[in-house]
Amino acid sequence: MKFKTQLKTALTAFTLGSSVMAADYKIDVPGMHASVLFKISHLGTSWLRGGFDKFDGSFSYDAENPDDSKITMTVDTTSVNTNHAERDKHIQADGLLNTGKFTNATFTSQSFNWVSATNGTVSGELMLHGVKQMVTMAIEKVGEGKDPWGGYRVGFEGKMTIKLADFGMIKNLGKASETLELIVAIEGKRQK
Image (cartoon, rainbow, N blue to C red; front, top):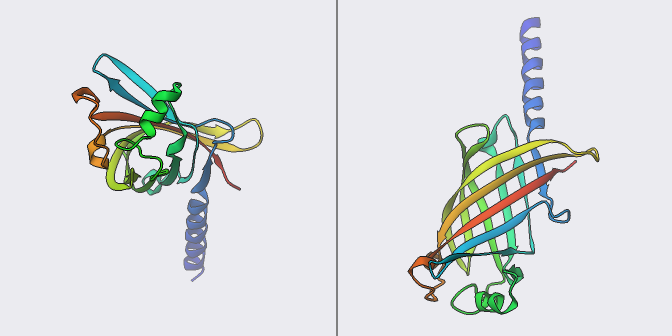
């Protein structure tokens, strides 16, 4: 009987200890330790690069059970920035982002598949231009650890290619510009 009680106590402690490992993180947008970037071919001759200045999100992560991770993000599409004001207006117009009607893009994860401690994929629902699609992004864990201010951080980078027409963006930019690469780099601060 004493052994069963000790075993139950040990299992309870192990279970509680394991759940403590999972943590919630806030993406460090105020510290500018995150970015949502893209690149798309311009006429098949060069890469047009840009990003979004306003976005937010949070995630949960446990190095011991990384497949149980979750992430949600919201991007303000009106904050598109290609370092050229006229081009930004062109991208925000009807036929592309149409930010007058669709001011936000969102991503909500549904599953993670880590094939190693640092590489895997995340699949989830991306809503862009008012269209929801399931997408899969290749992800890399960049690192984690204590910061100089007494906090704890973990960072990731993800990349995926999306077809504009799949999200109802039908403006003809030429064959070379039918897809774009999305690059999301995030550093999260663990919440107390």
